[in-house]
Image 1: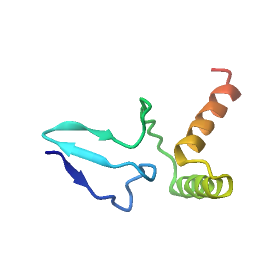
Image 2: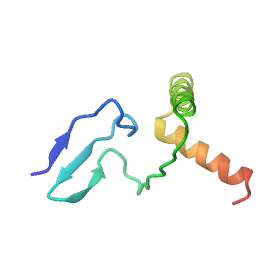
Image 3: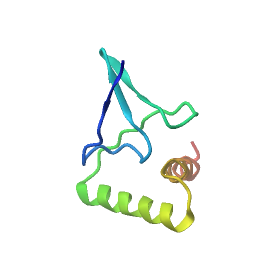
Length: 83
């Protein structure tokens, strides 16, 4: 049976998702039906905090989910650079 790991303070996984660890298999994200891939970015701490704050504000002001806000961010980036 998979062991569910509790969220750690620096676990940057969107709210509502859990990481499942079992017998060396990769972690699974249970709460979303879509096939999602992780984008890992390395930025200074102040930019990271500003991003988290901005996402939190967008979620609470618009009622959208963190995943929707993050998807919009990536989509806007790709459109800006015509990728």
